[in-house]
Image (tube, rainbow, N blue to C red):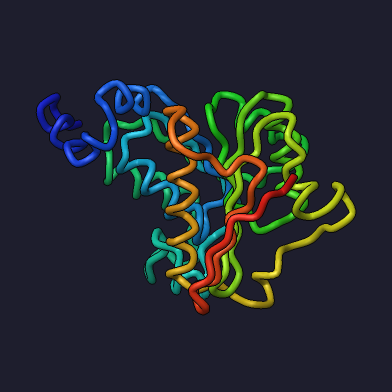
Length: 236
């Protein structure tokens, strides 16, 4: 554990952008990151470095060789290991002052509420449309906002869904109308796109927690990094 002086130095570069009160608020906040792939690794690490006090990571998968191109917790020696275990160990080495709980399980309609119920914000880093709807339903039940990101090829999208918002219905249509995995299964994922989208998600998490800044509620931030195209679409 770092002593008090070192803890203050750790967050020195956060100040002037964040107040001391906002930094203290982050230290008391809890965020659940669902999916620990290309997006989730980046989101977890940035939240840990920013000083979010309690982090929960959820993923049932093991690392595969194809993850090495973009998943920052994946190394050659960790291929075959559980992503959740690697995430917990990595975050512990980055910021030992945090309360970190990484769970090796698949989010579904039966466990979603339990997984996120103690969090202030849930972060959707999933690759399954069905799982996204399960998360949205649970977040509505638990009155928790969701910061959602998705990537495919060099394109990404980010939105923020508050309890009661139509959310994924406006993006994917009614629940059950479209299922399965996203288009990234066809287009692939590039490392810079994953980190870019994760950064945008973390910026939204920060603004939701400190209640300051513009939030992508009922809006869809869409980017194509190969064509340098950036757009914010109104969903309602």
